[in-house]
Amino acid sequence: MNIYQQIASNKRKTILLILGFIIFTIIFGYIISLFFDFGLLGLGVFLVIFGIITYISYYNSDKIVLSLSNAKPVKKEDYPQLYSIVENLSIGLGQKIPKVYVMQDPAMNAFATGRDPEHSAIAATTGLLQALDKQELEGVIAHELSHVRNYDIRLMSLVTILAGSIAIISDFFLRSLIFGGSDRKNSNGILIIIAIAAAILAPIAATLIKLSVSRKREYLADASGALLTRYPEGLASALEKISRHPKLKNSSHATAHMFIENPFSGKKTRDFFSNLYSTHPPAQERIKRLRQM
Image 1 (cartoon, rainbow, N blue to C red):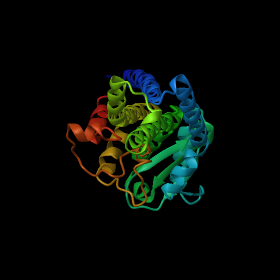
Image 2 (image 1 turned 180 degrees about the vertical axis):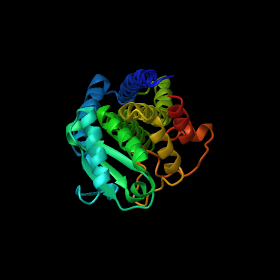
Image 3 (image 1 turned 135 degrees about the vertical axis):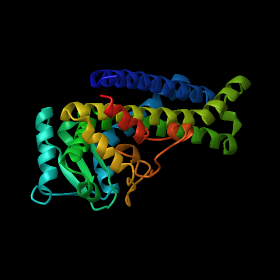
């Protein structure tokens, strides 16, 4: 599969996953709403609350991620090679040059954030800057700029909020069964069974969908980054090094999906279930795909 086929394939799969996720969320919200005899009104309230949370997250996610990662803004004279690579690749993409941040950490990792190319930032660790040569660093920065260009940060914010909303509704429902009064609940036995099953299984399914979307966008950013540099081996070589030392001192499971490699993972191999619950595809598979382009 060449670069263009990989990009098209990943975009199609992501669209299907997102549409399925939205439909799944609406159906789940409606089942719980029926249980409490709220009907469409309850579903409407849920969608309004979801919209408000999405709006707040949309405008503040970049600040939150940069703060959690302890990333600090730097000047061009402090990191001239990093700045030069970011500027040249941004010009090549025809998009605004993002703000540049550095994390004082010996681990090798990087991430991009921002709701769109006009409000974006690139962050890299000092360990990454010291360990990679110029072509490898170009591969990593091209990968991160591709996340910005493909609006992956916006997309993953939406997916994370959807998954979080489902988890909150499930928790509220299950707690109401234990502590709430029965007079407010629908007495339909079949509906009760369906609602309980949905409340237990929905958060698991939502998490799996979220992680699947994250992995698809990593493959897409790899392919897009390789297309930008016209040198897939640069990113492939960088991933070989990064996968050995990705762990960060300042990292959060809430932001792990944003990094080029999972900051909590240092394993070279994973089994099926580990891959299923991973924010990133196996580094070996990513490297293999890059070298087949």
